[in-house]
Amino acid sequence: MKVSEVMTREVEVISPDASLREAARKMDDLNVGVLPVCDGQRLVGVLTDRDITVRATAIGESPDVTRVDEVMSGEVWWCHEDDEIDDVAHRMGEKQIRRMPVIDHNRMLVGIVALGDMATDRAPGTQEALRRISEPSEPDWSGTLSSRRADPTRS
View 1 (cartoon, rainbow, N blue to C red):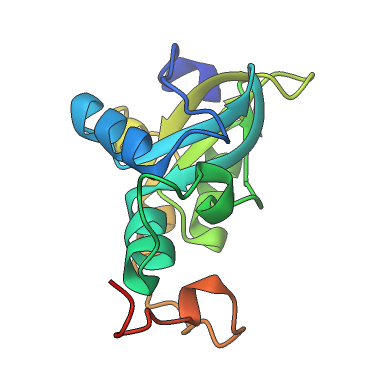
View 2: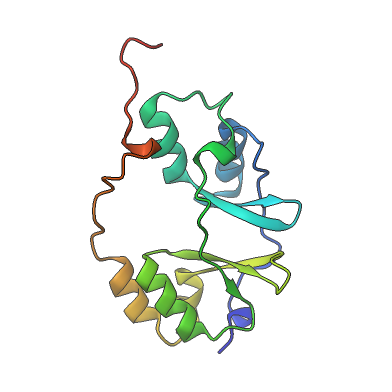
């Protein structure tokens, strides 16, 4: 089974220079927790509701002035629509991700595939991916943006 058989096409995206408030409103309107970040149709990152909460809000960043590219995940795991589902499910399990952007061979976004899409179609490898994704991950001790905390004196 190929990714193209279960993926969602015509995915809404957000620009890297959009504000976090704009991104959060879009997520709320669409009832989604992730937005691919695209410069035109070229995939440059992924923004999750967790990125907004943990990387920005927790350290006191303003959603009106903080840009998407300041907190998005720039290291994006993606697949092609002609990839085999079981291979993609395995990669999702390894990286503990539930959604993966789908790109063409020019790195243009063509859709997104979610673990839920795979489970609904009983795609091979889905159960193993879910088990691996559900394993607790290690704490991030890297000292990057998400480990900073807001200054309590800052309003």
